[in-house]
Length: 379
Image (cartoon, rainbow, N blue to C red; front, top):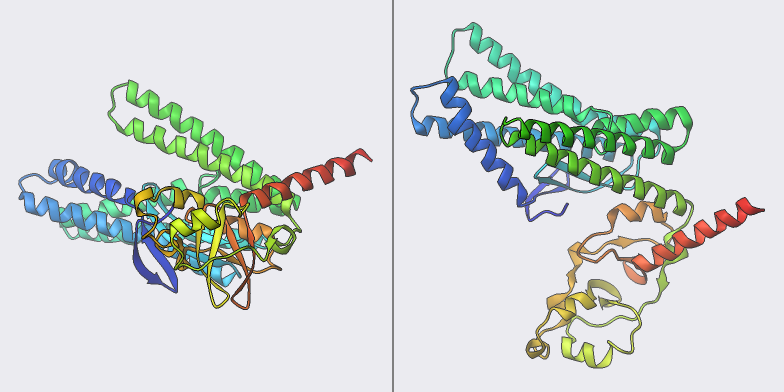
């Protein structure tokens, strides 16, 4: 899930927000300001309801951010890099570089998020109880009680043993510890995600058809997302298993043809397009990669503008490039492949370009690995 805009850095990790957050933020704000708070605490002003709803929604998303930051902090302490944190429609995601090296590391990285949500929920719940004991019955009590309840609910939902939830990671850690097989553990967690997703879809549709409102459709949407994410995790686990032990250098195309960012799109079409058999062209300055142009990006430039448009203007920028070292395990690279570079990574040594990895390179590696396993089994 890519960020639509950046908020900055927390503990050295880039934090971004996807546009879909605005949708759920608006729904929460409206639901609290127009429904829950007026029904629970009547005779307040509209401004008071709006401010209370806004405060609750903002603090809720700060809690989601704290949840993801905790994953990032513990991941870094356990030797993993963190590409970034993105808040989106279904909460947030911390994009980790590589995988946990042991079941214990998986347990720590996965368990910290729900624990933080639990602590936040208990904190606000305790404040609500103290306010109630003190006789406070206004909107402040409502905001504290809602924040306590929603964070406790978030913690409970996240520990359900199904991928891609944190509970699915905990289940994977347990199965991995018991069997010693990380791939098998991932498949078990993914299948559990399928079961939970189907259950949520069925329950959500039943609630909607029973006339309980659009909340049922929201549950069904969450279930659909879980199924899709669980399917992706199982597929990635099987691919990762096939590629285990293979280095980036084993699959990369060495010394790819390059170009300058000052080259126009027209020059590229006339001099490179038919002479170059690959569909991506790295841009370099002094031997260092500064961008990546793909045929899809060139194709999007109107023919009348190609003579005045440089490759740098349509390239995937340096900050969005996926860089890898030749000796890096290919399985560590896979989770980092970004949408901007269309699944490609540039291989560098001391900052200088030495190769490129494309989806077709990875596909061939998977095919060779599968063929090798079949030949070994057939002996």
